[in-house]
Length: 221
Image (tube, rainbow, N blue to C red):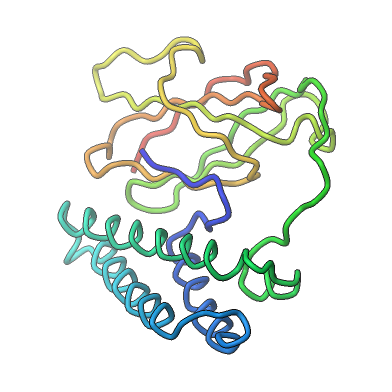
């Protein structure tokens, strides 16, 4: 299982769109920002490769375990390139907020995160996105989403095959990731299709944890 919890978009289609925008915006500002043409050419090549791999992996006629693996590899490589480009050319010297917005990035927040004990209880609603993918949307069971202490969530998950014992308590779940997104995309392995994903979420703020939310399960397409 893999997931994204940082500035990269959750959808592969949107990642491609961002990469193409970077080629245009960074290309127009290459001299001012110190972005070498070789970096832009590399980004263009990796974007084209990822787009072609995604088209192959999503096509019913060409989708195979190998095509799915190659698609993941292509997007992992593209993600590494975008992270490197952001670190090298967009952070030093720091760009203006308008530049960040043009690149599809969120302007840097210089306001310290408020402390406090998280008290809200949250769960998720799942929805289908594609093969081996589930969308998840945060739903508040109790507490206020406007309280700064209730912003971050740690989502726990376990994948269970037919006939295997399902987790009974949230503490039984094995994998987790932290996110501040209201919606996220979780991508599962090719062999997880037909298995059941079990989830539970709890608020987490500066190491402080809120109460567990109700457990949720969904069949992996």
